[in-house]
Image 1: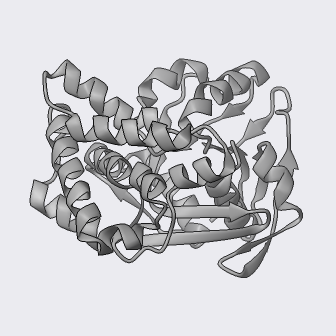
Image 2 (image 1 turned 120 degrees about the horizontal axis):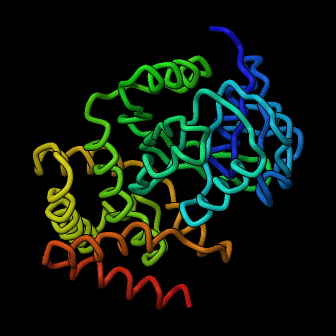
Length: 293
């Protein structure tokens, strides 16, 4: 595959992971980020394997052309990144975003030279401590929409050794990941446990199931979801052996802002819209805010 000029905006754990992998395949990669990027240094160790850190930048050049632009920031920082991209007047034919929540990508086309923003959904976890990065993959892996742009972006990602599968049911897949986030992320922080331990305790597993059922019923009002029991089995099978603390847990430990309002908080808003119950999500929000404070 032809090597590309690539910009990754919001280069935290997943951005640095993707950038280092693409850079190792001789792509011209620029990482745009802040604190985590500064701490990474010139070498990054991904699951104990050494990679060179790509070019690090802390402001975007004006009117630059890139073959691919990836936005990998946290959801609460997404609009800031979009504004920076717009002000810098950078150009690209392909824009992609890796996000945990149900971001409405169509809203951002007008800010990106009328180009589509292609969502990538990742079923896995990342943890970055200075220049040591852990990738905790699951069997579901990386998924992208089955469009012309999505296939091209997916091939680039796959060329770096990261399987990225085009999926005709990408909206259902995105909703499924949202359910995973709502079931596991805050619980990992509240219980101070990695995913593996959440599933090993019957008390916590029961909470996961209750959250799953509630979120499934809410999201089913707007998304065409896979069968409930099949999706539930997939969640348990994919995550029960993952020895990884959620990004929300990592945010609490590091004193950073969390994305919980974009996960469980969004479920509560959607439930209100459809006059449904969201008691389990309300309990999670309440307990999370108690430990966060």
